[in-house]
Image (cartoon, rainbow, N blue to C red; front, side, top):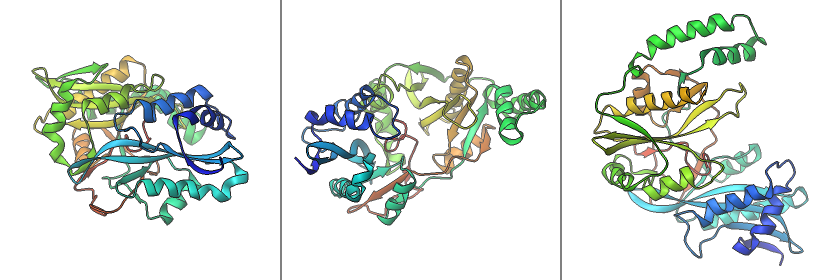
Length: 358
């Protein structure tokens, strides 16, 4: 068959061959088969009969693809299955038909929220033309804790001046300065225990029900969703830290190692941070727990993006260093009920939106 067709399980083999062989792609066929399992087969938000995305076929051969990944999202206080556009790829000789794939995805998302959080340069222009907007967040900065000062200092000097004997001096100064600035992280808050978890249990459901009213628009944070996001892909597991008071879950953070940066540093990057506001010590405990984890594993830097202005203020009070973040490319569009109703004041978007973080 030719034309634009919905992706079916019977297409997985041909689609994985297409993606693995796409110009410039380095991931093998097995990687893409694992992605399909994560996006659809193991995804708690995917329902039988739902669309997975769209293929472009010519003489029976796959020549283009644009996928859709569902995720549970709270929109206007009610849970719905949002969609993410992902992996929009068309062979050069068929680019004139590329837009038909994306329009098919938009039609499927006409009654919900659609995210596109990892677009390339060309895709950004298309998104803006189709009235996508950047997610409403506090700012684009991030707060950091230097873990391995000498490597952080050397990377900064190498980037700015091509290397320098001043790296050791700068590292010692950074150690002294950060030790004073981050003094609030020296001691664990009394009564709060932070644990690394291999599974999110029913206490995550309780935390979500207690705290979901904080924001009208945000990710659903039930246990099944957390387990899928953190542990659904065997090759891309995250670190899940839970904060407990008297064995009750009062907050959590999700982190991953990111070594793909221009400095070559091992950055322990926060993807989601969700403390119970009724427990004022949780943010401090989670940041301290993440710092200890990064130290134990030989990482260079802990980085927490400013998901909200309130979080930015809390991190500033703890003494974390504020740095400029990466250029933002996290876009969304919503129509129908609650269209235009997502603002910074009533929303909380993290680094787990769309396929960013997956």
